[in-house]
Image (cartoon, rainbow, N blue to C red; front, top):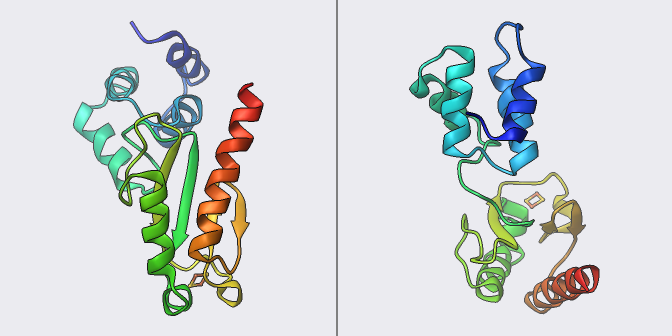
Length: 158
Ligand code: FES
């Protein structure tokens, strides 16, 4: 029996052909990632094999199979950012968050990713937290940004 939120999503696609990608997108929007159980339910729903659904889910980089943090921290490692100290920025972010690139903090607050050029090389080096772009960051700024972000989150909670 599908989880109620998944059931609701699948009901929208009832009787329609195809739709695997759209279903995966909706499920990821709802859950923040694609839970394993949901992939099995989706396979059943579309009468596909679990491996077909799994291969599509793993083919696209924007689908996640593990739970992500509430905030996504991305550090550009493109050439322009690299020559302006992006490695230092990434290491500082890793140290501050206590995780390696590609990981999520234990409390699921942050996920950290390295990305290729974000298309704003003149502002290198760049760090992005969710949708906010931080230009010309320094290691000190990284610590400040992440600390302020946490303080902001705490204020919202409290
Ligand atoms: S290399 Fe970082 S924005 Fe282009």
